[in-house]
Each structure stands twice: as C-alpha cells, then as structure tokens.
Length: 217
Ligand SMILES: [Zn+2]
Image 1 (tube, rainbow, N blue to C red):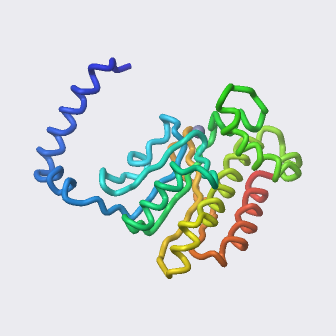
Image 2: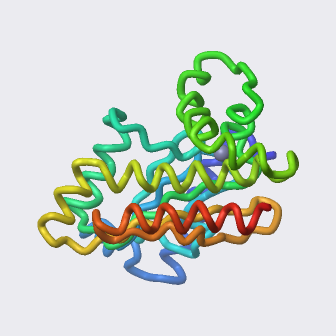
Image 3: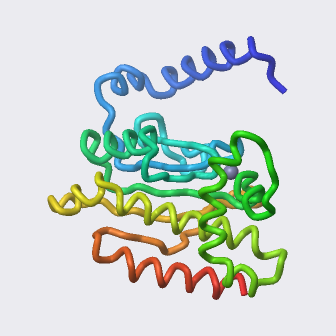
C-alpha cells in the first residue's frame, strides 16, 4: 500500500516518463480539451474510466458518484453533462455500472448505511419499479440484475434531461450508452441500452429490460 508521500513521487515519475516517451504531450494537452466521450460511473476505486478503456488524459470527460446515479435535480451531474454536450461536444455518453457495487447491494438488501441511504433510495426506486422481475429471478442473480437495471434507468434519466432534449432537438449527434463493468474479470458489457434520439428511448428501454430478463433468468 503506498503512503501519502509516495503519491508525489509516483506523480513526478509518471510525468517524466510521459515526457520522455511522448515529448510535448503536456504542452499539447494544455492547449485543448476535446474528448469525444463522457463517462458517468461509480466512485468505486476499482472502476477507473481511463485505465479500463485505454483512454488517455484529454480523451474522456468523467463524472462519478456512488452507484452511477443521474438524479433529475442533481446540479453536479447535470452541469457536467451540460458542459460535456454543449461546450466539449462529446459524441458519446456512457453510464457505466459495475457488478458487486456496494451502493446497489445496499439498495437491494435495504441495508442502512447512514446519510447515503437518501442517495441509495434512488436505486431502491429502480428496485421497486422492477420488483416483479427481480422476484422471479434466482436470489443470487438479483444483485447483478439490479446493477443492469440501474444503468438502464440512469441512461433514461440522461436522455430526458433538458440538456439532451435540447441537444437532440437541435440535431446534435450524441449517443447515450449503458454498460456494466465486471470487477471480477475486468471486462465491460454492453447492455444495449443505446439511445441517440428522444424517439428511441422507449424501444431501447423495453429491449434492454428484456435483455436483462433473458440473461439473468
Ligand atoms: Zn459502485
């Protein structure tokens, strides 16, 4: 385990190595930020957006919170999405959940963890919306299914945000994706909740939920 003072040593070594292997890397980075991708993921330390996707600094704009939730009134997430869409002109936004997510597990089991219960309540809303589907599943499959369903619902929340409604109305090309990451194998799964217009939210949603039933039943 690194100590806190090691972080600066690691940082200096990393910066020197980058400059040695890619001269001019930082001066180019300083001039512009033009990522094509926005990642909305969980704060979990095991799910670092750049490493998983092989993207470099400057290539992915990241917003993370507990259990990758997009709440309609969360100014933090909405401001990040607005900046990504209107200023950076990202072409893809992926909402990325992960299996074994502590926030999702707490929501599923109704575990009280304190203040965060109020945040996790959003995932319990997802659980309750799909209660019948989850109850028809083997108990050991419910946690992974709720990770998938949470991603699908949060993709909808991105899609119905004023930012996306306005962007699509103007004809801007932005596609929203729903993915899930396996901490156990390091692999990303596409949940096929892929939306690139307001009209395609509903059919994509129905197909993606059917996909969860097919995979988890
Ligand atoms: Zn998590």
